[in-house]
Length: 420
Image (cartoon, rainbow, N blue to C red; front, side, top):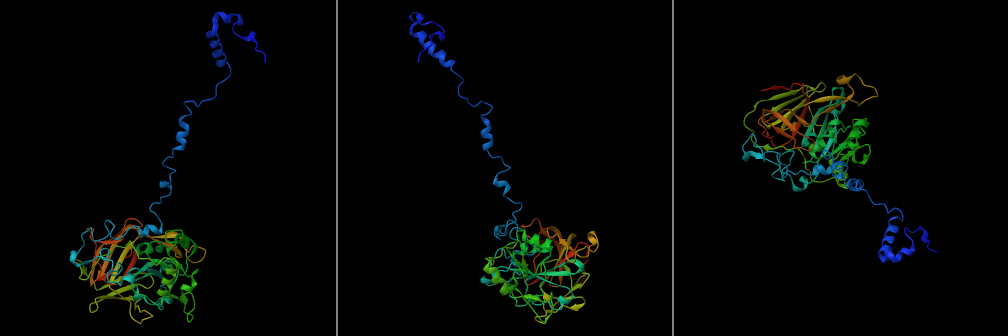
């Protein structure tokens, strides 16, 4: 390969004059003119990969994966009675001296639902919240009501009521008649930390139940037929019953029969608290089968009438009875969900066959009847997993009498009549 000296910036004969310094200068000049250097990042590009590699707050799992509040079964297990800041009289003075108060949050051997001592094995099992019909035909067949710890009666369509009965302290062989769930059953199983048991539900209600944090604590007869039974001497639908022991076996097989951690925070006292007013009778004017409770001083308990007749438990033949009657005034909203048929019968709040949303959150007026007296205050439930409490005007817990309770849920515009 010949080296073309004609392209050099000075002729070879001058090398003697310039010598090696000129040669070195030549090499450097050729290197500078030999082509473009390799590209290097510019200052404007330097911060770009840093910014894209650094996650911003919005897409981080800590934000996007955290519900508000967490609607998972684990959330029901998070608060324990000892860890809850203000559950009951443990941190708030009650309406009676502390020596008279029975606080289940302080004693794990006391039922949180009745305030009575429980066998440790019973205390560890999960409550069952069972849906019971209350139309005229079902009313004549209702059984084992007196074995429930708490029964919640609330409005449904067509001016009827329906029960959600809580079974924990006692077992019952013939609970019924069992019918379909309603919107209030999105909340009651959370309050009681119970397994919800019912026959079925219309699609919109059923979807809300299964798409909620209750999806892993539901025993529905429509898909768990062997957990229930029918009395074939009566025609359906008011012939469905269940044995609580069989329902517990179903819950046990699914890993649901765990110790309850209810958000209900009630305290109890054997002696009635000071204050209150005399009350021998109360009437709840439900449009169909209005309810009357009458105090029996000899038993120290309340006897129940419905539709003007003594309310008799079909299984035992005894009149329905309770130690406490709790009247809860709660906002009722008629929804667009059709419970019967395919067309709405009436519009808006006048729809007769539409499902009713009973908004059992926030707070509302309260009356507690015990020992022939009535105590007024309010119920409070700030949010889904907050303690559900019965308090007086000063915010002190109103103690219930140890024993069973009926909750009469009423619209805010319904007047309960009290006779001293």
